[in-house]
Amino acid sequence: MGNKIQLVKNAMLAVQRYPWEQGVCAQAVWELGDVTTAVAMAHDAVLRQKEDGRLAVINDNIAVTDPAANGEVVWRAYEITGNEFYKAAAERMLAFLMERAPRTDKGIICHNEISFYEGFSADQIWVDSVYMAPPFLAVMGELDEAVKQIEGCFDYLQDEETGLLFHIYDPGTERFVRRKLWATGNGWALLGIARVIETAQEKDRKDIAESLAKRGTALLNSMLKYQLPDGRFHDILNEKESFVEGTAAMMMAAAIYRGVWAGWISDDYMFHADLVYGNMPKYIDEFGIIHEVCGCPDFMSCGTSAESMASFLMMEAWHKKLEGKN
Image (cartoon, rainbow, N blue to C red; front, side):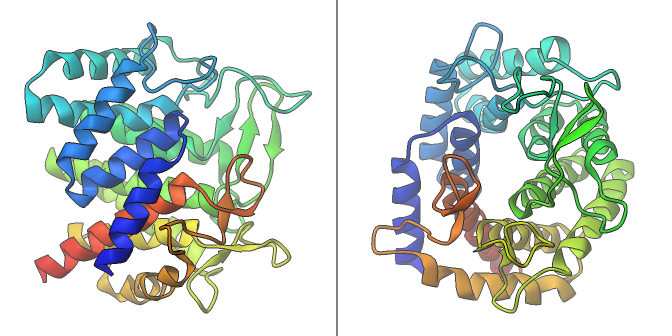
């Protein structure tokens, strides 16, 4: 497996990246224990920081929560180096989220500044945001705000029947933009919750850790009802005609391993993660690119993506940590 890890890591570092991709890839190498690469990626995220505080921006500033995916690694770079360059950058990113980011009338941060869909407002809530902003808010000491953002996303997006999260809701028009139970989106949410739980545990906020553990376990249980025999999911969890993909499965496996490691997930769930861990390497080609995942650039078809490779590395990192603990 070691050769596969290096191949995937090399391929991941070679792909072109938007803010969320830079963030999840940097987080993956950080969790893998590659501090040198993590700091180097944090450095470039700061070089591309906009005046308003958003990190790793290479487009026209349309993303609101995606840039915050870089935030924890930038803060860790400060802790490692003591360099105020990173501290100031992380604090600017935090200030943007807390003071300037567009929000709904309920105080929930919008995902973008524009709508990609005609007839809808820009005040949209995307399931992706559960991963992008709350973990950084928590690391920066804003745990209550992190919980507020997670709970707000659930309020807007959760399907009462399945317990899963729909992809995009527009509070501005009070309509769903994409009323689909997107597998990768639910994977993003599960990983985001897991990261906030760990920070709550570190800061001895048992109230938050216990509350989010219930939230995370419920979401995990809802996802597992749709897990396929090989460990993967349909791209739209409840639509069997949608393609089968592996990113959501690796996100789920990473969340299970880290949850078992942190003590908020029972090791009874290990079977589901181990199934993914054992099967996903077969989709890695000779160049380290993972296939049969929800694919960029539009994430509407089967292909390849940066987040699939990052999720694979996170799954590997937490599998290894759990093995070491045991």
